[in-house]
Length: 145
Image (cartoon, rainbow, N blue to C red; front, side):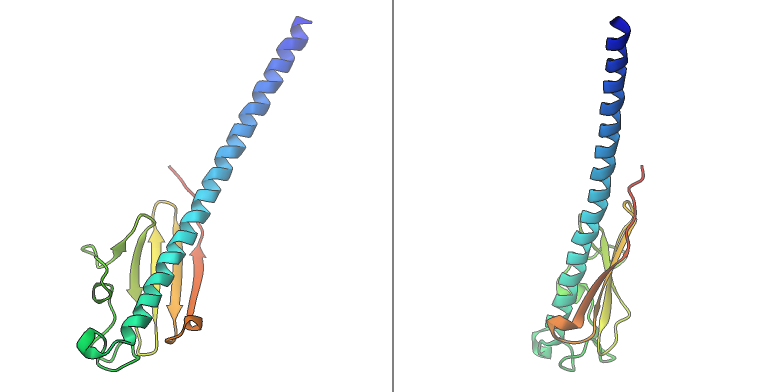
């Protein structure tokens, strides 16, 4: 009877240990996905702000040519959208760092990266309506310590 109880105790300990490891792994994967979703939300918000900027009149801080993201003299930047940028010119959030790249008269790309969770997302703007914003998770990483 003593050996049977000891065997059940060891078996229960192993099952609890496996359940704990699976739970921690599931939490980590959910954390990575949640971060990517939050960064995508940040990127789309910045893209939407860029659309609003392109529709402002020049006296109110908009571009020299209405509806364009750059016209050769004035281009959309994080700073002229009202975001506080670091020394690298990137906007830092709790989710990661965002930057604006490849600005043309017709559109731009917003990229957000989290170096810890190895996530990267982009939002591409190709016009001035909501349908002209396309967001995507480029890289869904994993948490490593």
